[in-house]
Length: 112
Length: 119
Image (cartoon, rainbow over the protein chains, first blue to last red):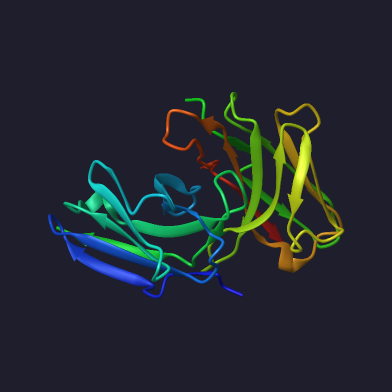
């Protein structure tokens, strides 16, 4: 059973614009959420995380929003750059430090 | 660079052979995790250690799989009698407690992975 869902397999955005990647989860026990970026033939690179006590966390161009009532989170990248082109994975766990449950990923293409 | 390292990066083996992978975590991290990723899927959790203790194992970890972290530093993942369905990217991650983050957090940092192909 897929407890973390990324319903958009791909997204194309123009350079300089905002990229919004979405993620939904079904397990109400999840209280820690992360976003990873992955290039082909490499391991996932940690981007940003948020715990359920917050609804927003920001780090440079990356902002994660958490809507617990809707069991939904999103990653905003502003402004988008061609180097951001990669597959983005949403992950969730019952507490930080425990097993992560990943979505299937969204492939982001940022065009010049 | 003192990130997570994995060895080998690629392994091709024949069905029925045993294989062993190694993971060296970030030195100050006390938690170490193994995941498996197949094409078109996100990583799937296999098992994790806190220091040398194996605290959780996924039901994906069949009897043919065994993981160890004997001295609480590096870890090995062994697959016995490999099957074609074992072909995947095997990812290792490590984490350490970040007290400076509000509420304290463990963030998992991944290695480059070992690509296993079973022929």
